[in-house]
Image (cartoon, rainbow, N blue to C red; front, side, top):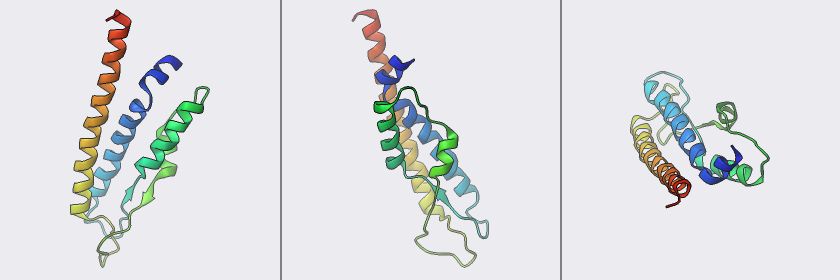
Length: 124
């Protein structure tokens, strides 16, 4: 298992992180009209840097959704609303679209890594 972790690198974790972030942004979108709702998000770059350092320094650690809950941040709105809701429709839609494209990129990288491993195993 450690071989695959080193061979695949951060890509499986990145993919899972993008899935988790899509869920968080979806929650923000679903509550865009809920009075007092506080929009949440993650600092993707800092989480991924921590995961990268854990992979290179670890003896077998792992990433889980429980770790992610500690990393959730509140979003500061561009235009505060009168009802205290910090979710802004256009911002959430843009973040969701960007995260979706980043998910596809992460999936492409993971597929390339797996394809490379497959070729190496077959001796190509």
